Image 1 (cartoon, one colour):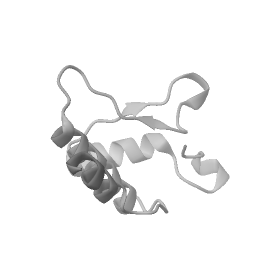
Image 2 (spheres, rainbow, N blue to C red):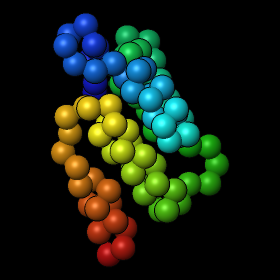
Image 3 (spheres, helix red, strand yellow):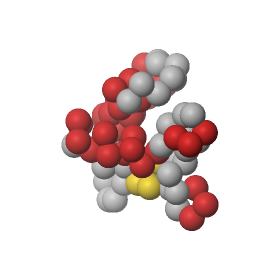
Length: 84
C-alpha cells in the first residue's frame, strides 16, 4: 500500500500516471477508501507467465522512476519460481 502524498510519502494515482506515461502500462486505481493509496494489477483474458514477468518488471521500473523506496528483486524471484 502506498500512503498519500499528504503524509509525506507517495500518491498511488500519481504513480499510475507516471507508469502509463513512461512505460505505456495501465494499472488499476484503488477503489473507495483506498483511492490514491494503492494500485491494482489487473488483466482481462489470457495472462501467462511471460505477461506476469513483464507486468512485474513494469511495476518495479515504475517504482524506481517514481523514487518510491522499495526492495528490488521481485522480478528475479518470480523468474526463479516460474522456471523451477
